[in-house]
Length: 47
Image 1 (tube, rainbow, N blue to C red):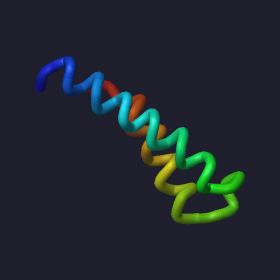
Image 2: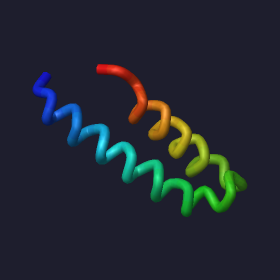
Image 3: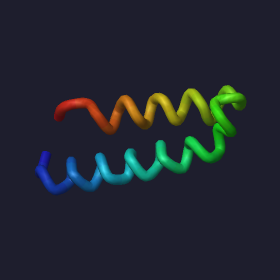
C-alpha cells in the first residue's frame, strides 16, 4: 500500500476519534466511546 494512502487513512482516523470524543460525552455513552477508542488505537497501529 502506498505510504500516502496510509498517511491519509491515519489522518482520517485521527479526525474521527477526535470527533468521537465530543459525541462520547465524557465516555458516558457506550457506542461512541467504544468507536472512539477503536479509532484511536487504529490510528496508532504500525502499517
